[in-house]
Image (tube, rainbow, N blue to C red; front, top):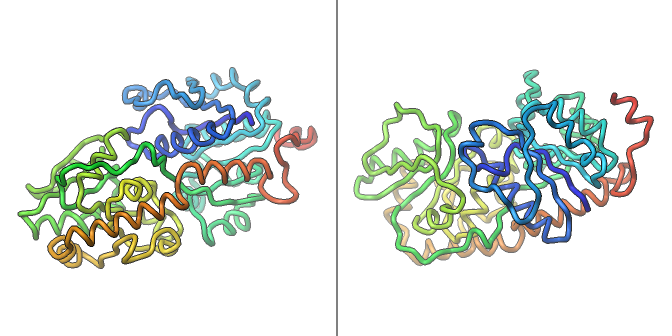
Length: 371
């Protein structure tokens, strides 16, 4: 299969979770024998922070602007499938171009589904619009559950399917390293996540001055009152994630408000930390139990006091058992190999009966209607 992907970024993990998601998925997809071209908009903030410039599993090319994308339309037309990701600059215009030129299956890959739907509802069509969604054969969503039917019913997708994030277990192995922090958090600053970070990490750090904490990620405002026992790491490339997790007694997952509201929206942070066998402390949301068993594979303390009790009372055997159970769950169903097989099945099937499959070209009449 020849697949063209137009995504936010493959080359840089700075300030986004898209790059690691694409890297794991496309590496596994290539491992199934497919040919991949990734087209990335050349923007300065990623150009200055690239940590993947020559991937062995796909061709990576850059285009300067929408006009520059025209140079790649022959590749788009010849591909068996073309996938446009969320948050692609000028994504609505990119989506239209793909739908006009592609002869194979087209898909929108939404790595930010709850955020996307909230933007659509308030008339913010930054990277996808109500007019473009029905033109994609598939809407592949980071969010499952009831949201999938809503995408079909309200926004007109012919086939909405869950394609959750995943992890490459070869890139995220458990490492035998001394524990450096009692509780860690890895994530870019987000205003709607900050109150939970305050409740589940910063306040426990204030109550436990003898314990060690760390927050890694960019874009945190300078006016945050960090306790002295909270270490800050401005940016941690993916190559440093396994050591970061393996040096943590526990690690924290914090979910954005839109994703909590939608439910069934696991962060890649969950699967990466789980693969490293570190016990995960998380906030709660509907559907979480479908990915990890609460109390056995993930811990869901109800506030600062419960986190303090956990850090003070949990012994190493308990922490190890939770971490190993999380790793077993990830390896059983949430690796990049699992997601690549799902993506292949979706593309080969064209989504569902009645939609185009690989090898069935878009009718000329449909193309003319989109022009």
